[in-house]
Length: 115
Length: 111
Image (cartoon, chains in turn brown, red):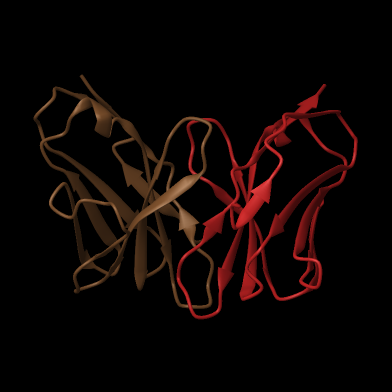
């Protein structure tokens, strides 16, 4: 149980394009979903937290207009990297949890490469 | 000082060895503690989830939390080459959704 699916797993695109990443909880309804960024050989950095039907809460230093998050249902959250540039290249990982006292379960990540 | 400290390794052990992975943390308000395993180019996989101090066992894995010394451990018995991965510890306060991760320890289990 507690499977989180992320799509796509890898995307390469040109500078200036926008990229959408999907995160789905397959076998449970997620009250809260989280988006992280991970650079090589570093730990996960929380970017934002989203609750179904409400605006996302962004961590300090994360540009809201750059990283658009939509949490339209209890099983789906999307992250759109707008006007992506090479410095946005990274490994983006989502997670989801059922309730406040429950652990976060992670997707397999999306490797984003901006040329 | 980071809130959660982990030795980056790599820790290299022979197959079948008992592995001990450790973290220290500074926030005395942490109540939830987690261990995740992360293979290269994959997302973290939850191994152990504990609340407050004590031990928890699941198969070959045992998690220990000592809140008095702010020390958490993960023991892996009968280690296998497939256990080779990066192990991340994390803590969380009761009142917060935010996980605070260590930087991870890379484990290599030699056949």
